[in-house]
Length: 580
Image (cartoon, rainbow, N blue to C red):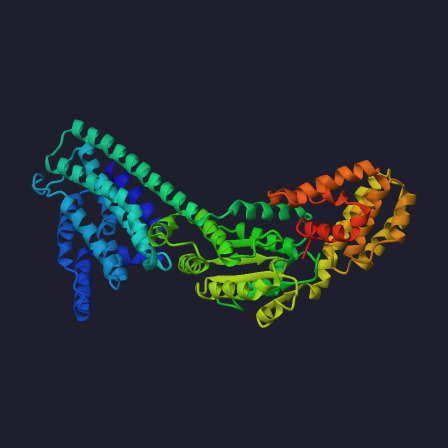
């Protein structure tokens, strides 16, 4: 039924527009549209920017003929304003951008030239149901154009991306015009049922082909832009996923309820930059990963993130981070690929920090909610800290009020001057939730340890162990993890008591104790083999494997290399656990 096709097409369009715009469309007559066009024309004339709005007359005349002919379909009448009123809305929004306005006027002129003359109907609407489908086809095509145009001009910062987005749409637009032309010819010729069936098949085939062409073009442009960026994005995904795995179930969730974090998350409130800092091993990377996961769980929130480590190249670090940000944007907004391609990639521009910062600043204005999370900048050379922080802050503040930045690091003299006046979240002040998380981790680990030793520990010893660990943890998750790994290696309650009596006081002592345990359990031959594995992993080009297997290589070191090994192991383990 023609009425059903028209209604479904209209309902799809209504789901894409705002309630305010929907109300304006339903209340607009075709005379209102003509009056609005005259008003816009006077405004353009006052600015000496006349654009020949007479080009719209064929469209309006054709739509008026169409609406009078279809008026006999009572159920279709409520949907008729949607074929003329969106024009008024689109012209009102685009009138200040002459380039965009020219594109819109040209498109409506082409559609108007393709509309049927309806001279063969003699003022009477055909009673043939198959023939009525042609009018429904016209309605669908016109509404689809309105829908595409509406999406382009209702996005944030739409005027920055209209040209590239329009070029992406042109494949489908050309197909729509051809479909309207073919349908109009059949209407004017009073086509037979056979012609109408053929038209339906041709129309579907044309639409399918245009979709394939559009997707192919999108894919080619996207790949060209990604090649231009040359960003190793999956490495950041691997780090994020690994940190998620390191987060003990039920912990770290306090951060998303923290008042300072919630203020930073809200648009228009608080400082646009927040500094999360704490001592080594206090869990900053895991918290950063938790924040990212929290935002990723909401489809309306976008997170761009980068985890620095000692393997991150210091030279050109700003450009390196910005390349990753760009590739992450293209992952969730592939429709922005034509903009990157037209404005930067196809022009042969180098993906420098300056070029990418400009591109990011523009594209992030089109995203209603975006947060930047950069973790571990203290692991970069101190000479790079001030410049990188300045670049990141400049990017966040130049991207509009929809963008904010979180930097997570240790409190170093090379970092504090750039961030101390911003909103800060010091983990040393969050003793209650951190102590609660550490207590939960220790309790679960001790239950598993008691089970492994056949339940021989008893309540008093378990409580003594728990109290010892909690009194010395001082908010250091990494220290807790290392101590628990020492306890897990104990083969008896007696050995466990001995270990508890000599708990290491800090991270370095914890590493030293682990190394001494390894020395006492390995033969010289095995120590040599382990050291070769350690060296291979440490200097491997596949840095991901170093992080992934860092706890395995904690077992590899010669006695005469204890001091440098501790430093190297601290470097690696700090990337694998509750570090920072």
